[in-house]
Image: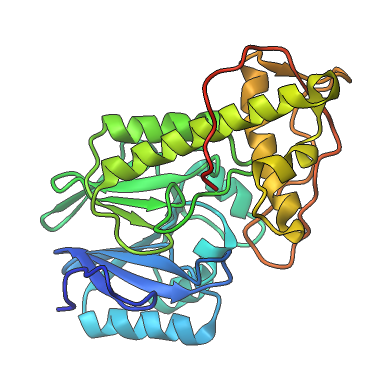
Length: 318
């Protein structure tokens, strides 16, 4: 049996988060600083595979060889969400193992042109895998159909793209929603999660502290954006106009991506009645940024205007 997690492991090294929950990092075309996506194999004699992520043939073969060496019966493939760095190996594994693919209906809708989802997973669905009881949690924010999976006894959480081992998570409208994301993080704290297996990076042993840090970071970023907007002429600006002040350390080539993060916060403030748009527009402007490589990051050409009250200080978190 592979050794239980150690924090000094390399990004591609397999480990057991706990007995019956094994993490197999696979190389994927994800966003830096990540280079791998954590595929998770849950169970002992019978297993499910969460996010067979890699589109690369050698990585797919490595995962299949690993599963064969374990000698377990694979029951299904489960998906946390639709992004390409989580679904790249689905078709290969489905064909090789002759197993169904399960996901949230919103994920199935996004994948329908490329991957057929055989059955749905909903919030609260439970699956017994030997001594393990796995509960699906609908966790929107990063994606509308995002699911996390919690082992009921240990409270270990397979978190997908809710948190990362390093850095923060991209919330990109319209698929990403900042209000939903913060509500999801708050729910997970109330659910009293234990260790967290993120999609990218090492095991997070103190899940609650990580979630609290993420909430604190987003709240601080929101205050920072609100204060920056109030300094602009007529208290209005486009998301891109705010990027140099909010993200001074980010190279200009990544400013369009940073502007999408500013937009996500501004849309939340708009929902709360704290900003509006001088042109009277509504909805989500601009083109969303997707996780797949090679797609253009477009910045919304729309202004937002501050109409609410400022709250609190800002921070220097990225």
